[in-house]
Length: 168
Image (cartoon, rainbow, N blue to C red):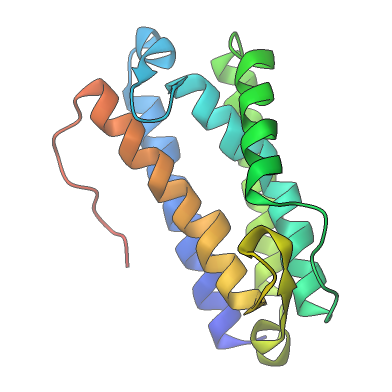
């Protein structure tokens, strides 16, 4: 097992634990709180994070095996996110958290299995304007940073003042 992969997996797990802890500490009404800078509710953002993890994992696996990532651009992603927000506006908290737990565990487990050579492999990624980026970059930019990005928006929307702890 790669120490780097293990460290990345643990960072993702911590990010997702911070998300779980945040949601579980909120009253039920917070689930429908609108996140002004996102244009979505807390619940929709959590559902979004849960549902995109398999796609993010597919990108990571493609890069790790030397396959270019094609077919998804920033504009397409914006369209998919808008459609998701409409379709899942009434998503349930318990079901969404279960989905997040399952997909998070899948991501963490898969990242742990990567070798250093796979982490270092770079391929063109259409979502990043065909820049040749590494599998490690995709891991850091998607399941890791993505979780903190939306968590910060959710925390601001509900007025959570205490700083996020245990990031590293």
